[in-house]
Image 1 (cartoon, rainbow, N blue to C red):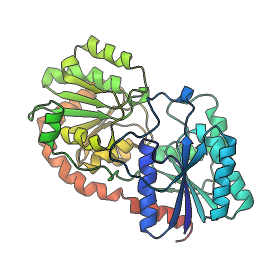
Image 2: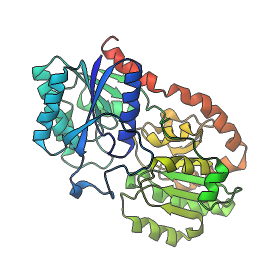
Image 3: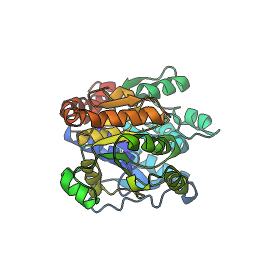
Length: 375
């Protein structure tokens, strides 16, 4: 099958780029002829809260892609369509995660349906964003307009999709494990590099810091945890929210000695260090659809403590791969952390996760995609 993938790819950074790379490799491994059309500019600088849109990792996965799209440049949309028209693919796979890209995707889809027999598929991370604005409904309807097939990775996204497109032709496939990251640290080495002690109890909050991810709830839980036991919290990820708000809260709570901030995009070669150092990964999210952070945790056989929002409970086995707690409840979150370290879960959970994670494979995702076209 001839496939064009449209989405973020290296040298752009982030989870979407990792996802595109892993799916591309799986398509190629299964004999498909694949091209990637990526962005030369995802966001105008005025809309981008981070330090850079480029992946500055030393260890990168360079795949063949054409970075020709500009999210706000209609001429680039025509260029992308022309590439697609010349290739005449059987399927265009768009990675869709926010309505901001809807005009670009909708224009390419419209032209593809008008001038080719190519089928169009969206892999939906979100239908509406976590932090939405009044334009999002209009843009979402525009983005979903000319799509034949949808892949959703959680029931929450499915519900949102059907609210906008009740007759959508969809299949469900959970977010696959991010097995591209190297297992390049053991716990002792990782903790030495992070100036932690071997006997420390270590929590990890990983990924971009945004309001909906609830880091403030985890910080509020820290005094409750510290009344029962000593722990160290690593916060590893670039702040897309006001950093001062969090540092003020850390000061106010008096937990400075137990919280370590690594305010930067974590390069590929350092991801394994943070996960190796951690005993458990904490996702105190206030809202969610699905999470790549959990799938990185499972890659490293790390348990998770997560909230019962969105699709997070769908991929967490209570008492086996971690714990599920109510959102915005710092005391219950603290109790779950204390419970984790008080028993033998630290030893038991990783063994179960090693088997459990096999259900989240890239082959399963590609099976569902191929199934739409009867391959």
